[in-house]
Image 1 (cartoon, helix red, strand yellow):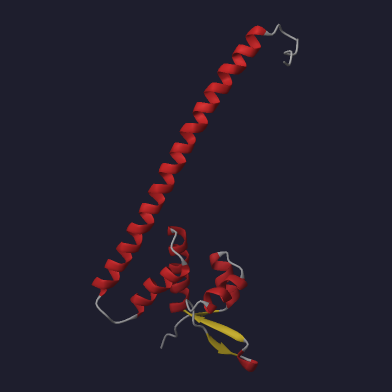
Image 2 (cartoon, rainbow, N blue to C red; image 1 turned 90 degrees about the vertical axis):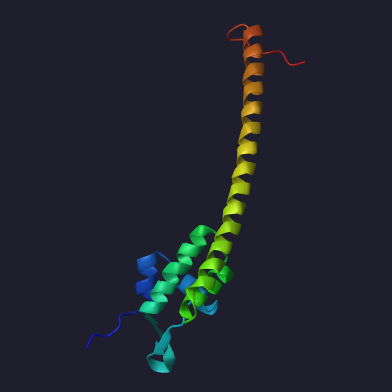
Length: 142
């Protein structure tokens, strides 16, 4: 009979390039629920389910979701309910984050356009200054 794989906090930290402190934080947030073993239950034992939840949490973070949003969505997949509501919730959260990213992109593009205008103006002014100043001489300050 095959046993389900288990992982130590160090295993997961190494695999996902995280600190053990970050993993403990995710545990405190309720995203991970390791069992305890050893003297006084000091050793955390993570299941394949915990590993998957950690992987999904990190993916959600990359998408820009808060840990609370990530937990809500991941918890939905743990329940035996119909997946329709889960997928609708996920799509709603994705749509909201997509809009935020598009708004940020529009702001960045406007900022970049403004920088380009100032850059052109500064180059034009510099060209005038260099044209009116003989080579090797410093411009006279007014």
